[in-house]
Image (cartoon, rainbow, N blue to C red; front, side):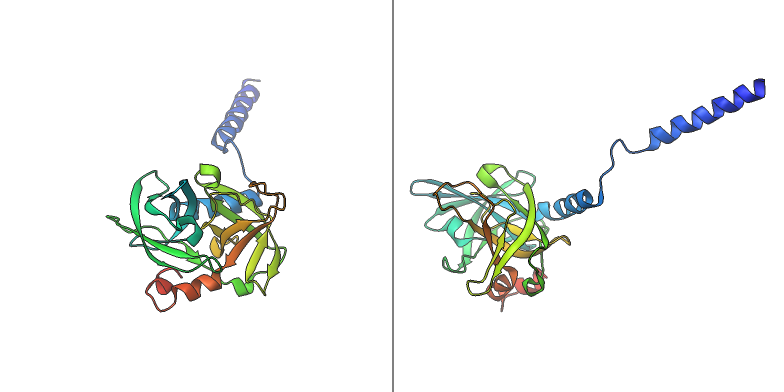
Length: 227
């Protein structure tokens, strides 16, 4: 009798220990993909505030060289002076423009002075993308820094060189990365479509293919640094 009671106590103790060692919550495969990409890439994403004539222009940027070179959309810093970059840990830097192209390609490079190497993004290959492919976007919509959204590639416009996506892109997201599930940048988020002039997202956003970005970086050390 005592042996049976003792055995029951041992079994209950083992069960209790098993439950205590189990994680409080488990994530499914899709969630883990999102979590892993975000935690891997977010330290290489910055927010950008540019003082312009009538207020503040806000956007997002990707660190493409560990010495503090940042890729963003040229319209984020257009006609601005006094550019402030905030990195993922909240630290701020003043930035200077080192290169930019017009609104068609809509790309610019900024430089900040940093005392230690920065984490960089990895550029993918936009020739390999497919309609229906899952994508993730990280940006600073309406000033909410480090926001992750997800969607798919809805359409590829080869004539205008644009990737269309339903991943939420809003004001402040411009210059941020459109990512595949490996955490590679396949596009730079640029704009949203609003036929009613409402500034909020309605599920139609556009990104510049990353291979256009590679051409922009070509013939500089940045092309090798951000592979």
